[in-house]
Image (cartoon, rainbow, N blue to C red; front, side, top):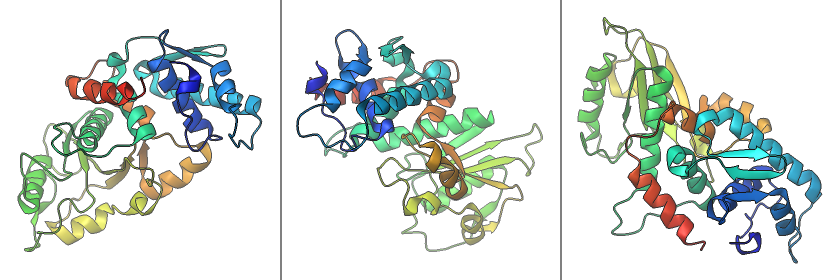
Length: 294
């Protein structure tokens, strides 16, 4: 595939989206490479309205790529040498990063009859990242749940497993589903008594991640409303996204969303120095998305 065949993102003067474009181009190109030259040629396509200087834009894009390599470390599947971005290993070894990249860049729509569910797959990655980050345990509370489908029973089960909080006190939970709580992670002491690191997280895979969802999960009110007894532990809030965040947006996002687990942080902590145990669904979904570009 040539750079002329891969459509540019709609935000064609956004260094983050253009860095995504270069990474995807490297994934689908025959030699596993993409370059500043490929990007410059794409930015000079007829009819493309770019307000920024293409040379300055390319420099910003490669700065962003270097930041990704630093943040994701061993889980980053690319390397930059000069003005060239190359696959440094088979992307299956860095499946979390490539999955989040494609989920962010292309989005997703759940197709009827399909047995692969990208949103749930991302939530599973988020749960694993939180578990490894706290060096503890985690649970994907997001609906739908297969193991404990009903909200009330799931909340009771979670409190028992965490050793924090006590029983759901609300009788009518029919419309709750997960009430914005997607991920719970904790780090126990050997005595398993209350009083520990306890993280409540929300996931956002869509482009509207900076909207109302950013602060819709409030762990304190959640526990006060739903539980007979709230956890005595301080409740750490976290926000999981498959996207990258600009430095200018990072501070505000962290203020409103809590600990931000972006694509690079999720990739780093999910892999934690090794390949994912469950990799096939991620590889299959990525392959199906990239196949549409051929």
